[in-house]
Amino acid sequence: MGYSAPSLKIGNPMTAPAQKPGLHPRNKNVGGYDFAALTAVAPGLVKHVITSKAGTPTIDFANPASVKAFNRALLALHYGVRGWEIPAGYLCPPIPGRADYIHHVADLLASCNKKLIPTGANVRVLDIGVGANCVYPLIGFAEYGWHFLGVDIDEAALANARMILGKNPAAEAAIELRHQPVWDNIFTGLLRSGENFELSICNPPFHNSPDDVIAVSQRKWNNLNKPGASKGAGPRLNFGGGGTELWCNGGERAFVKNMIEQSTAIPKRVMWFTSLVSQATNLPHIEAALKKAKVAESRIIPMAQGQKQSRLVVWTFTGNGEREKWRREKWTATGDVPGIAETTAENQA
Image 1 (cartoon, rainbow, N blue to C red):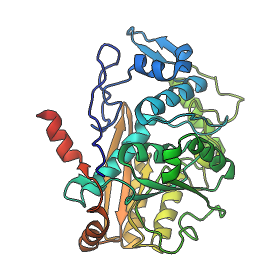
Image 2 (image 1 turned 30 degrees about the horizontal axis):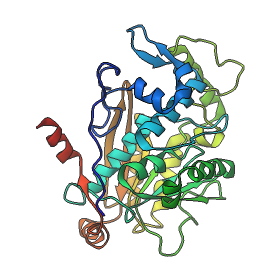
Image 3 (image 1 turned 45 degrees about the vertical axis):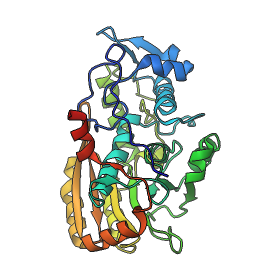
Image 4 (image 1 turned 135 degrees about the vertical axis):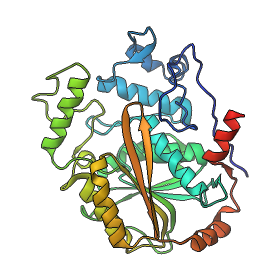
């Protein structure tokens, strides 16, 4: 059975702000947010909607409860997710940014598949640090029908992810969750015999220590014109986040370098290893680690959401011939949808 192509429908300009700069063309929020539709599918959002200075509907992005209600509505409207909830203190990620990651790695696979995105259960994705929110697998399954293995060291986070999946039976059948018991292990000791994946994805802990989290939190509150709001409250961010989600020894740089090193032990069991990298200053160190690992190919894929600049680092140990063999054996049986080159051309026609 073929899988339906992702919609490029732009939101109603009467109910949505101008197009967000930098979002992927297939992102459901590339045309802004349709608050009428969001509140219709998630009535609990109504009490959080306010009017911006420009006279358009918005929410208070400094209010964690509002951000959570907004995420719940976005997931329900665009991805059919029901009963999404996360415990207090856990990361409540920006949905459009997470969707962009999924769309960019879909285009990465399309680059190996004659510019068509392979879809369906034959595409397996390994999510390192799936978290309590389970957002990447939920979006990836809804958009492309991919199947996921979500891994985390936090058993409470996995329990919450299982609760979400229990309320979404179709996603539950496509998303497996697994505990990684060893703190320093990323890929080491994780995969079972015969398991192979088209992609691994990761949103690594960015910070080096709890003090770094507090400092960033304070800057965010200052930018939201609420200076001092987080003082004395610990590492409080408007999007939340627990310790293992936000920091590790050495921060993002050390985590991604460790990921690269451990990927050398399973070089042909994942076609493309990928990770989000938020700090551009980390790229030279990460590129040096990739060179040391003797990868077959690596790329830096730029991403942006409004003023926020980020990027994906991707690498593979498979050559073009190996990727072609993988494609012929696994993807020809799936329903393909156009990649970025085709959808962009169609949208401009």
